[in-house]
Length: 330
Image (cartoon, rainbow, N blue to C red):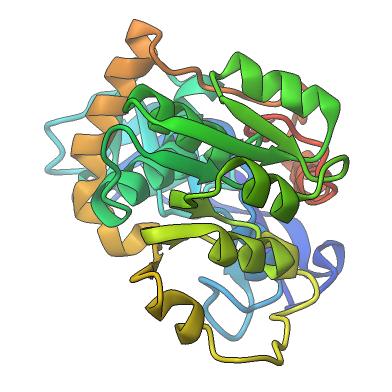
């Protein structure tokens, strides 16, 4: 019987190199309603660390398969599948993508024109930015929008979509090179938080506050964002990457409701799997924007080739080195 390779969490650990290993297993043919996809590229996401630690999206106990997205080409179709054929390019979201062959429900597959890194970035990153901003954040036109970690895979999409919608966009990042990158995306006010004080900049330059904040960093960045909210401002929580390795920070202070109440401000949280019914409409819009050149799919140029390099790719992202989406070529 043929075999394939996949990345598996064989134990839970806060050191993901101890938790993960590449395994070779038998490849069964696709069953009723399934596709088999030869994976070309896999996306690296902040949640990969939490999965390895057994704290997020992870069935217990181990072993369990890793990953959340992949793009590739259909290599076989199961009985009853009529919408896909061998050679079709598909994007898979919400599936364990760290593998060289993916067997999945045809109903979950998103048809795309090509299996490229750029198309892959539209998966978890593009969909999170688009659905969160529009469906949960209720982004409109003429607002001030702050995107934290704006030079990352998801943040870079959020910044562009906010700008495309006719808003003034602020973006945080961690280096002068990333400031230049954000300017190239159209960000009006990049803030290198290692060179400038985020709270001071927001207080001095945005005295009326920020209308919508797309926040994925957590920690003190989250606190500064709450303080910066305008009257009726919305803070959209998509993650807290600064707290993933150390665990949730304990906060000692007045309840946050006091900061929100006097500004009629709100906290809103977003998890992609709760909004999966919106994926097809938003993906169609993102693909059209990518095709028309109105958004840019930013991928980090550092090459990670082969499934065995996935662990290195996760480590690279957590060191904050990436500009754009980190992608592993299978």
